[in-house]
Image 1 (tube, rainbow, N blue to C red):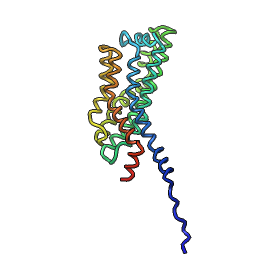
Image 2 (cartoon, one colour):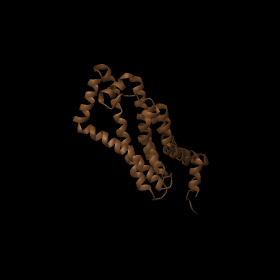
Image 3 (cartoon, rainbow, N blue to C red):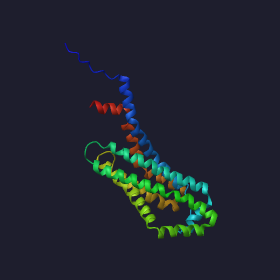
Image 4 (cartoon, helix red, strand yellow):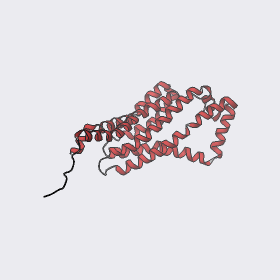
Length: 241
């Protein structure tokens, strides 16, 4: 007579709880991607205007209203932070081998660049304080000296721009190749960082913010699709197939 104990069935409620818990990371990351263009738009909308591209005028603009400067830097900082989590989670949207390698490379490049760019925003707070303590001319001279005399700063800035701006374009290309999102997402992302700021001086901050959100549509669409993919019903249907 067999004494083998039959396997204990997992209660339906426990299985449902585990399925629901497993989808939350994807849904949260999708929500962060939706927030990313809104945060960037907030950063652009509150960015202090400056008379020219010189270091002294830049420092003067930051020091004119340190509170607004801090708000603008915070919006941009958390926009990059949100992008880090969203980029890594977006890889889970790829099913099969098509586009997976390109998406993975793009996600890694995006995360690295976003971290670099986020760290650079700390200098806005220091420049604003320096501008009001020692004057914008001195603060601007310090900034220009730092940029010219410390090679590592240039490396940090260059890698931040290259990986932070082009990494998401590669990520979008990989997702487009995988059929997750359309190819229009690639120029859409680039337009958010190049077209919107370029037109800012001509159309005003409100229009710039609106244009940023519009150009950020690829992140919104991708984020919404990640939220839907993370729905317990969708996950359950996928497991049943």
